[in-house]
Length: 131
Image 1 (cartoon, rainbow, N blue to C red):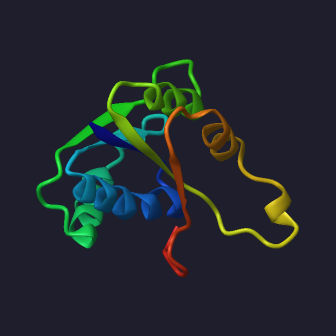
Image 2 (cartoon, rainbow, N blue to C red):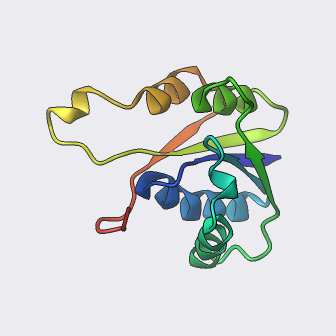
């Protein structure tokens, strides 16, 4: 059993991590972090993960990090994982939108919400979270 979270080095991606850790902790399952492009190799990636783990109080959650497959979109990788055996939830970060902007959603978020096999949690970053 596992929870999958889409990570990107943005406020939205960083905002989704603590929620995903909390969900994995509550469900007693592992967390799979799907890093957009090559963001898992960024210098501060490990620190971001540990900060999210501490914020959620999820010290015992086992984490697996996956890079996107080359030549495939971030949405495709998240959707494919949602069909995996034992995947209980996919967590994605979304942007805060103006009333007019709410008519449109990012293409990755929209595709994952519409095409994922399991439930999807769309998480907004806390107000004032640095980008």
